[in-house]
Amino acid sequence: MPKLQLITLGCSKNRVDSEHLLSRAVEAGWEISPEGEDLAAAGVDTVLINTCGFIGDAKEESINVILEAGRARSEGLVRRLLVFGCLAQRYRDELPELLPEVDGFYGMNEMGRLKADLGIVDATTDLEYVGRRLTTPKHYAYLKISEGCDRRCSYCAIPLIRGPHVSVPEEILLREARALAAAGVKELILIAQDTTYYGLDIYGKRTLGRLIEKISEIEGIEWIRIHYSYPDAFPEDVLEIMASNSKLCKYIDIPLQHSADAVLKAMHRSVDGRQTRELVEKFRRMVPDVVLRTTMMVGHPGEGDAEFEDLLDFVKEYRFERLGAFQYSEEEGTFGALNLPDIIAPEVKQERYNRLMEAQSAISEDFNLSRIGRREKVLVDSYTDGVLVARSYGESPEVDGEILIGDTQSINKLDINNTIGNFVDVEIRSASEYDLLAEIV
Image (cartoon, rainbow, N blue to C red; front, side, top):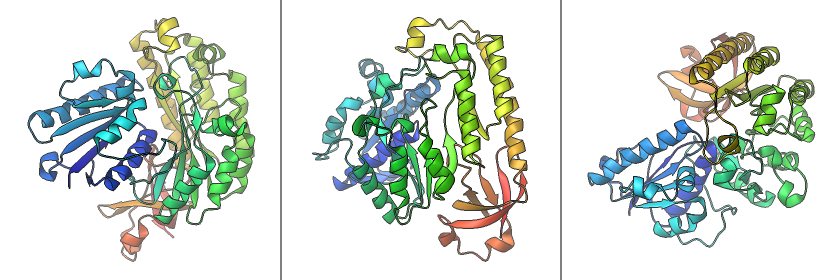
């Protein structure tokens, strides 16, 4: 039986693509080598890399991983090296000449050819549920509810790579969710380039709320989490469901990017500073105890000192529980790269980034410290070096901090194998900027 190792880079949306492909590969007779397993020791026949091409750092990581696998290919440790995903789509014409050690590149519209080269006989479409081989812990999984994006943010290349927004029909998503629940998944994380746009193209209206309600009826699914929302026309019914349905985590991942009118206009964000503030206030009002994760960008063309100070004041005032930030960089083909000169000096961008993250660091620590003494329901992800690693509704896997349970007396009474992937009640004992320490109650 030939052995395949699939390396996934980039976002959780790529992970879902990989998991679907792995399922079909197993059906076609491939043995799967876990990602990271030594290629020579495992006797891997084919290495397949799912790349990211979103921003400069992600592109650099993809190239480095390809080069490393290429060396293994040149040394005869593997027979074949194949590359697909966003980087392969974005630079389909350039990559074969730059990376001759790769045996095949496949753009997003060439997945049929990739499957054929892997011996997968496939008469299904990309939007049909055909099975998943999870690469996450078995108790949580990502559910990709749509592909592509109709937005035209000035800095973003996703529409150029992934194409326009296409929702996955409800019946396919529900079939997938039921199959995941039957396999032991307790937490579903809904993802897309823009989850709030879901349903508009096939049902004529935004139906994210309806989808959530139907998923919440599936036996075994206990947490549903929303990632990658867009602030324009955020569906209010989702907030009503979040406030009343215990299965929908009071957690929203909504990249706001900025607060200053001039910058939001230059970004083509469809909302201004006032609307952005009103939306955050609505979240806090309609969903008490909601945890908000957002992303901000510094150094976008049009951001002067006044605009950055507006952003800094906004972050300090609204105190997001989770916040990440990026420094603007031109992405070829985007409106910004073609029309907005990047004149802000790198050292200015870095200084603004540092100031923003310093402010957020204090906010994050204050939020965690405020939880000391509280009892919380947590989902246990793993057990390492005598410590249970867990999350509450306020922590999403891979992007947020963790709750560490290290009280030996309580842990020794547990069946560790049955505890991992299940819920326990804890009391928060201490906290730092990112992680919390807790004891089982």
